[in-house]
Image 1: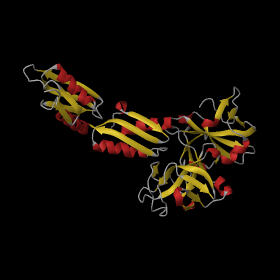
Image 2 (image 1 turned 90 degrees about the vertical axis):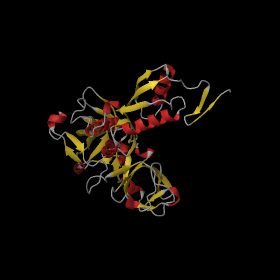
Image 3 (image 1 turned 90 degrees about the horizontal axis):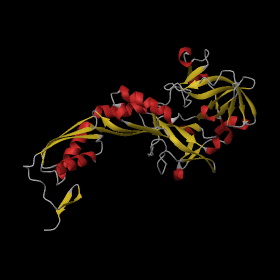
Image 4 (image 1 turned 60 degrees about the vertical axis):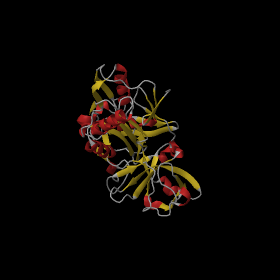
Length: 365
C-alpha cells in the first residue's frame, strides 16, 4: 500500500489515463484490491483492479497492463458503492482509502443474501429452461455467445435468481452483473439477453475478490463460531471454499457453513467438517466389522479428530491392525494407540485373508 501514492500519474500502454484519486482496501486483510483513477479532466473516475498494475516507478507513476481503449470495459466509480476507511487504519490521507459496500453494484441496497456457483435448476425464474443454470451456462446476445455464467445471486427466501455474474475473455477477465429480468429466454441450455451491444457495455462490472483474501476471512469467521482453525484444511478456488477437519458437534458444523457463506466473494462452500461423535461411531463400526479385531473389546474416544484406542489385544500385530483401521476412517486426524497386550488372549486365526472390510474368508484348510 505504501508504494501507491494518491495523486500519482496512472498510465496505460497507449499513454496517460489520469491520476490515482483513491484506493480500495480489502476490509479484512487491509490489502489494496482496486484503484480509483480520475481520468483526464477529473470529471469521470473508474475502478481498476490492483491486478492490472504492472509496476510503480521510482517517481510514483503507476503503469497498468491495459490500453486506453480498454477503459470502456472498466467499472465506473460510484461513491454509493463504497464507504470511507478511517485514516488511522489506512495510513492514507483523509478520504484516500475506501471499502467496498456493494461489490455487485446493486443500487437498491446490499447484494442478495445468497451467492451460488452450484449447478441446479431454477424453475421459478425461467420455467422454460431445459437444463440447469449455473457455472458455465452460455450467455448470448442475439446469435452471438458473449459470456458464460460464473455464479448466480438469489433471494435467500424464495430461491429465485436476482442477478447473474458472467465472465468473458473479451472483457479483460472482469465479471459483469446482469439483472435476471434482462434474460429474455432460456431455451436449449443457453441464456439469451434482451440487450444490444451498447447496453451490454453499460452493465455493472464485477471484479472477483482474491482467493487469498477470502481464506484469511474464512479463518476468522470459523474461529468466531468455535472451530479449531489450526486443525483445519481451508482452501478457496474461484470463490468456492473447501473446509476439512474436525468439528465439535453438528451445531458447530452448521454454524461454520452459515458463517462462511456470508463472506463477500464466497459463491459456494464444500463443508467436509467431521464431527467427533460420528468419527467415533465409524471407527467402532470398522473395528467390529474387521475379522482381525471384531472379538476385541476396544474403547474408542475422539477429541478434535484425534482418536484414542483403549482396551486389550492378544499381541502387537493386533494392536497395529487396530491402529491402521482407525487411521483409515475419514475424519480421523491422528490416532493415539493405548491398547495393552495380553498374551493369554487367543489371537485371531492364522491364514485369514481379508478381502474387504465387510468380507473375509480362510485360506487353505
